[in-house]
Length: 140
Image (cartoon, rainbow, N blue to C red; front, side, top):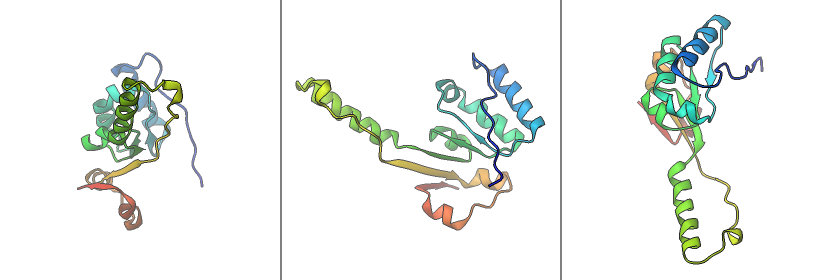
């Protein structure tokens, strides 16, 4: 498919300086897009990542909805409200006396796909109609 993957360019600890250094490196290396990892530091720095990706004109896919609402391009991730409802049900079972070992391990089966069409337009991207049709939500 002609896709090359590059590992993380942000070193630990992940502070603003590291993100800025990584984006400078990304710009020099000619990276075409970014897939943000689920690292908690990335969630904490979501505004900065969206800002730097916008300045670098890089399409960015996130593992959480919030950055896409801030201007990231897209998210395909676990539906966290659904996951939270399931966790609350499990807590209820435990509080009613069910042993945690008796509760089956839950694997998320509901995911959400959100596209920020404003960001796509700002990046000069045309999102295919078929992809838009598959999205759970399109931010316009």
